[in-house]
Image (cartoon, rainbow, N blue to C red; front, side, top):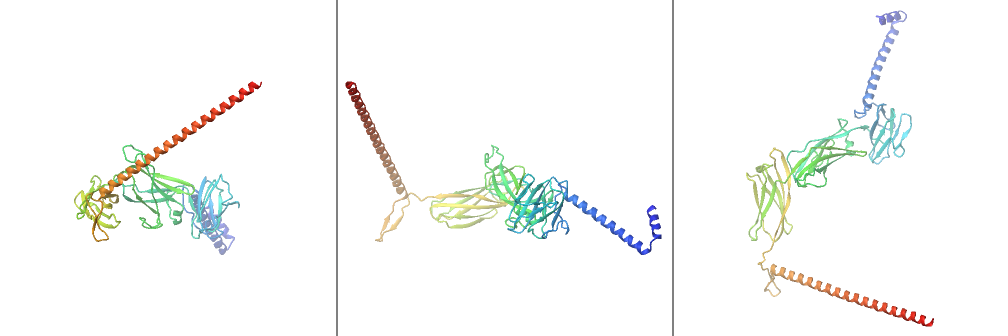
Length: 454
């Protein structure tokens, strides 16, 4: 009532147009006050060191085009890390404090500032930054955002319960900065995500005492098993081609000025569920028999299909495949082309007992086919007659005899050299003794002559 009364009294002394003008100014004042309160609240939220976000572009406080790259830091910040993306190959940026002083890549307080400059970005960590409006000057990329980094973490799907040696796994992870997903594509150039496996050093497993193994790096580039580039879903492809046993997966997040890690629960890497054996044939007309034995403890045998290659002694390669069968064993034939080393490489595809689809590589298997010792090879000589060539056993016996003869000759030469050396040593000793005796005799006659002269 008091406010209305004063307005009424005031209206007696002014005309209606002035009253309307004052009323419009009053509404404008309320609107500006409300916006100012909202801006201050936004600044306080931005300055909260536990809330990590992108500085929003409002054309005043964080406009990225040249010479107006401004942002505001509040007084309650203990530490802040900033990333500025700039044109490739350009010079590092210059930071201007609220008081007008500058921070350059080669001119800063090393106790309060850390600076990492790359060809495409600058990462700057500042302790107790000066509160107020800051400005960044440089070739900062247009339409980019200044990223405040506080706590970069990664969330990774846990590994399956049943994993095999030789298996290839696809695991996805997401990057977060202070609990919020990172949407900036350029950030993947800053962060490196590596995956290591550490042995738990349990003596009951085969990997006891094994060294750490780096198995993969996460990628968000749309290549390999990564489905979409720059979608903040980082895909790791693990090729577990190492010893079975208990391992602990450790995911490393590497920043230019910090490293963090995520440790998952240890897993037991099971042995490869497929074992290869071969029944060799000594008959050139009969093939070798390949056997694939499937361990049913962790896989469903009738779900497995195989695809691989045979490599013959002459390095010719023949592909083969074996489809599903209701059996724990599969067989295939290998053509007996000639004596020598044969190699078998196989990949298996199937399901675990938990229903998970998997693919793995069976360790390479090789076997040697020797020539029959009684086999005689005939060659045609210049006269057109068959000349009998020595059998393999005869060649081997002669080679052994020759090697034995060479060893005997070497031993004899060594003995002769030792005897010669011993003779030379005796001669040197005898000559030394004669010289000593002569010197003693001369010294004796000289001393005796001196005594007679006295």
